[in-house]
Amino acid sequence: MKSELIVDVTPQEIAIALTENDRLMEVNREKRGVDTFAVGNIYYGRVKKIMPALNAAFVDVGHEKEAFLHYLDLGTEFLTQQKYVTKLVSDRRRIPEIHKIERQPACGKEGNIADYLKVGDTILVQVTKEPINSKGPRLSAEISITGRNFVLIPFMDKVMVSSKINRQSEKGRLKQLVQSIKPHGFGVIVRTVAEDKRVAELDNELRVLVKRWEECVRTLQHKEPVNLICEELGRTIGIIRDIFSPNFENIHINDKEVYEEIKQYLDLIAPESSKVVKLYTGEQPIFDKFDITRQMKTGLGRTVGFKKGGYLIMDRTEALFSIDVNSGSKKLFEDQEQNAFHFNMLAADEIVHQLRLRDIGGIIVVDFIDMDDKANQQALYDHMRELMDNDRAKHNILPLSKFGLMQITRQRVRPAVEMQVMETCPTCLGKGKVQPSILFTDQLKEQIEAMKQLYGRGLRLHLHPYIYAYISKGLWSVKKQWRLKYGVHTIENQSLGMLETKFYNRIGEALTIPAIDEENKASEKQN
Image (cartoon, rainbow, N blue to C red; front, side):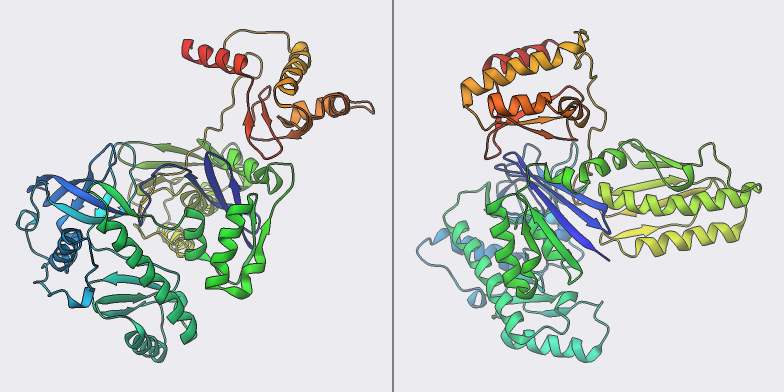
């Protein structure tokens, strides 16, 4: 299987697209310069509320909504960790060693959070689920530092090996090896990818993880409560860490800084594979170049088509995500049962693809086309389970109910991917007022002249592919005239509306004409 990662870096965000055999499988967006309360971030928070009925606490970590911490997420070594944190912040001159901290009684599975926390307490916590809709982040007090081969857990002195490693000899080797190289006071979970890895490689990564913990501790020592202590690796690095394999053929990046960052990380975890990282320098937007924009617009709408003319209707409600399967106007078989079974099997492939593409979590209800044959129902259920085996998110699938509904639960740690696929009216640009379309190029010419006066030559003008084709026609095209007269490079951009335009400088910074920008803001405010 050909796997590629396409990374689009802009001043506002980093968008990451994962493709398999040129088919878009995952899309992630990470805002730059703001705290997104990403999974893995560690905070020094303050308890705001104790909820005995929920056996949980609400903790202030800086988000507009208070974060949720359940008793079962305190961890067995919570009291030991609290004692260490208290000692750390009370004496800022030195950092106590973990293994020298006196062990406190472990927290049992049955217990009351009010016995361990009270309002006003400070606590070290980690995000396990990002803020979704009206809910704040979900937290855990059991801190872990995740690497490619290991998960390092302070205060837990155990070594656990992934159950997905089947060979008992390899399990024994890894457990004995890690037990001999890990520092005292730390627990380690050995991940599946560590199978058959050399001692030197594993030892090197363990040292890196311990160093990250030490940096976190030093930061905590000099921070006041309600602050970010340790930020998880960027989304791009996180994806590479979790899914990287020798089958990863290319990682295309359009930013030099991020390119160097990813290349250095691959040099650390897989030096022989660092050559797959490639810097994209083309003028065409990177998502357009690799057909990501088109696939996003066709695959992230409310209606999604699949093979043989069938389509899905996808709707989100407050409680669940509903998917309705339709065969359309086509009928492939005379027998209705056979026809329904065929379309349901085709729909199952697209449904699994959509769950992963949109990162849909929570309760999912699929309304398949009705089938009476129990054998067909069982075959569809088995097919769905087989397809979902490749999904990294935890999930559970129930057989079809008597109403023909399939219920699925899927782990939700981040908001689902959403994209506005409907475009602004190309005639009125959403203002409800029509201007002669033939004057568009004249108006655009005036904008180019104004931009040249403000910013000089060498501008990049992004246009919708239809407009780009119009100004490119002919031997002495409008595009060529503008290039010679104003020094402007025109580039087609699939993400723009029909008559939408965007100007950039040579280094990719967005440019605006102040007067036009103020006019647009006033118009948006009025609408």
